[in-house]
Length: 367
Image 1 (spheres, rainbow, N blue to C red):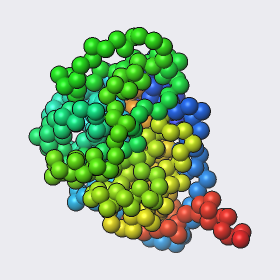
Image 2 (cartoon, rainbow, N blue to C red; image 1 turned 90 degrees about the vertical axis):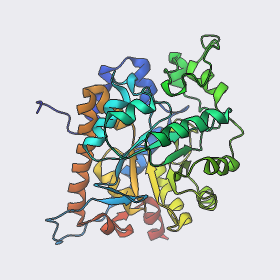
Image 3 (spheres, helix red, strand yellow; image 1 turned 120 degrees about the vertical axis):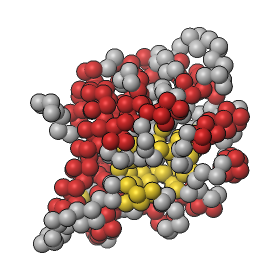
Image 4 (cartoon, rainbow, N blue to C red; image 1 turned 180 degrees about the horizontal axis):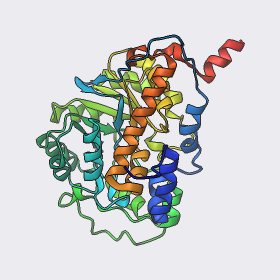
């Protein structure tokens, strides 16, 4: 065991900032425009208070849960984030091995800097595949087929990116579009991405993302795969109900790590609305702003089946490679176990709505 290991996510973030070139750190850490939602994703968790119950026998804590029929030792899973080789040369292979070592589900991004097949063959684990619907539907279909053949268990369709959000740090840094190994041979990258000002990533996205993306594309995706489809990027009850009607197997409350629409709600603030709209028809997951085990308790209390963690894994990967990514997962799991014990929750089923007090609860109490 190394001496002086980081003891929380913030310390890993500081190490990552020191380890990475500014362009790469800003790409990983940045958000859209004023970055209000980026800050709010974390701050909104901090405004939720826990309501612990005492004199409960917590000598045995069971953090296990189930998602789409797959047993998990804890409700923490790895969110899809792109270009892990910007953080560490081993990229998503290192992240996948870290997740597998913790028996944690990983959602692999289409924009992985390692090929789907390379990640799949690196270790045995349950993995989902995150997908965009491109202007060229045949590209999206090919990626689905490859994920199926590599044993991925579900498709996570990102629905909040008809166009790329305005990420000013990337524009300022003239961010170079990371090499997208999974699109090699499927799309031409011959266009002059160096032309003009701003982010090269932004120009690449404008040529590939489809602004006509709509609910009919969910229907199309269902027609080409038998894998369960989770819709990622939903923050309103209206869209959550529509997702259930469209046959989604799950809903992921996400604002794309605050990288798309600034002043969209913090995900934890939108979670309960979505959970109520879904009314138990499908599992609801949440990502964005999770930095502590107590955050996981808060999300579970507000109805999440599982919590997805993105940037913290990249901080760990940048700071200490595969060992750092694994330590981040282990640290959050350890924090969750302690938080459950101190809240008097012996299982995730006991993390009920009564365990938290939100801003809304405080306002209603004053009326």
